[in-house]
Amino acid sequence: MPADESDPKGRFTSRVSDYIKYRPSYPPQVLDVLRQRANLAKGITVADIGCGTGISSRFFLAAGCKVIGVEPNAAMRAAAVEQLKADNNFRAVDGSAEQTTLADESVDLVVAAQAFHWFDRAAFRAECVRILTPGGYLALIWNDRKTEGTPFLEGYEKLLIDLGVDYSAVRHNNISDSDLSQFFEPAAMDKASIPSEQTFDYEGLIGRLESSSYSPPPGHPNYKPIVAGMRKLFDRTASDGLVRMDYETLVYFGQLKQSASSVFGR
Image (cartoon, rainbow, N blue to C red):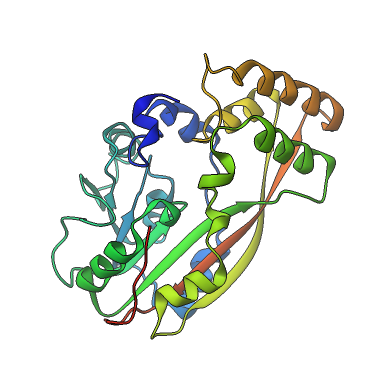
């Protein structure tokens, strides 16, 4: 793994192009849930923390929100600016989950999409409390890739376990629902689950693989073996030249209150 990819803030630098092309957006039902239960509305200000290349920012811009993309990785932030430059409701800032640079009580909704598992949780929680307006909400969102149920899903997971780089250590699934509920205490946490999917031809499958930070990069000893394994998996499981990657899109949301008893590690 390149040296900058050992740091969570740098590990996607070499994967920007694949991230833009092959990472999924989020199902529209996520917006419905947040409209009904988290005060999402047209015109509110959303802080998209760890906005990456702008996938989640675009999602909330389409809902009529003003979006501030907070991203510490310069390459990903530049990609977000390029992707969303036509929308005047978007601006990007060089900041992190722990130090957003945003003003006190300046945003109505904080969103972390596919990102919370990289954060220093205690510092992020304090930052959310600081920047949220009274009555504001936090939403943590993941496209949780299913790992069983079809030969393709199970084969993909096995290849990552066998040949991925630090795959088991960095998966967001290492954070339990109980951990997340504790993060929101003393306020209550709500949860929604929405099915979603992507389909890929072989080129798209390799692009999706290479968009992941735990995928071995070209030149790594595991790169050729995992690509060869994906070729065999694709040939064995594709239907009409496509494979389907199934997700459960998970949304954890609620309000935050200052709490001296809430202490979190990384």
